[in-house]
Image (tube, rainbow, N blue to C red; front, side, top):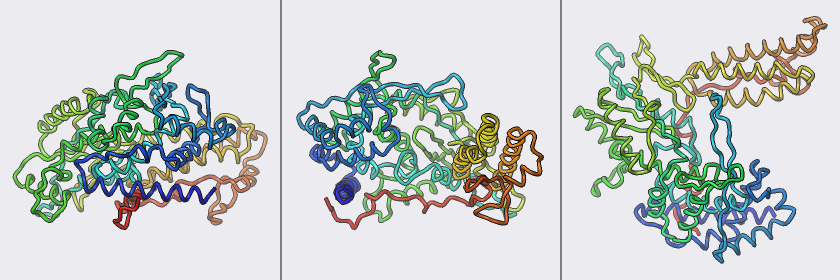
Length: 505
């Protein structure tokens, strides 16, 4: 079975490499023959394994089937029936089961989530296997959301490096900001309002197989079931579906296209020049800067984006209005007038849960910083308080097993921020205090010295340090997380982008 899995993976990787290399070499053409690969048993088996290994496989769609039930009936039988339906043209997607998910930090507000059937998830996974390398070859370098090898930290490092002042005054200080204004973009219900016609036009530019295009269109129009009522989906991508993030990225690439001159030259690059599009865009920024022209540079993570503007506040406001009109015409989306703001970079702005601002240093002048927002630290304190307030009947080890994953994930997310070590140390002290108060309530008749003797033990990781521990379960200290600046070369390229150069499929 392991050999079959490896053989399927090797074959799929070869197909993806071929599609990626072809897409790089032919940016204005569409691949015409994909249906055979889509309905190949190896593609369906690989898509099934991804769906089956996901925790969401335990959740059923409107047909009530889960991964476990399908396994009882037989995986091979399920995949053969699905392949037969696809090749005969009898396959039709089923409406997704809608579930409302509370928005964190926003009481009373919910995010609609569609839960497709397992069969539809497998087909969507197969479509993604083929579409991802084609569009990944054409996505812009300033796009980071839902792309293999990219993360929020890469987007933030791009922003930090872009707003970094480079020119020094006579006294050696950096006071001239390259991008003094920021447009904080907020799209109204992005996943629910993408225009299907405009999106499918973008898909057809790169995918010329009509059967694949028709299948994608069926997923967009399939509708949802909410409280036993069928609701048509006239706009938007199937939120919760496997291909939804990819389709959203295809549509939102219109934002980067508007700033092609300053991001990466593609259609406008001169044929006789040796440099690539990125170098040409860098030269365009330098020439426009010397000429005193306004420069705009975007960074996007899914539907969250910022546009850095080098001109005046009026230039930034004018660009905000022009971008809103551009989005409406190319994607059918609208910017929220209330939440889309023009902010001075010295005042700082929030992006992806981080606070980005310019700080003055008397030695060097202005310098950009990516910091931990105070509200996020307060949220972690609140979660720690909830974990150490209720259920005093359980053991210390059980409490630590609940709170440690929260602390570990939070520390890994914010480890690249400026002065993160100080925030981590403060939070460690607070969590330790909460655990002490929880133990006092748990054992009210026990002397405090006995509690310290029983539970304040030497760490198994660092024996010179004492912390709260029970058996092999000990308190996770955020301060032990290494803090550094994120580096671009930590971003991994997808496997299909690394090849010997041969069309190996």
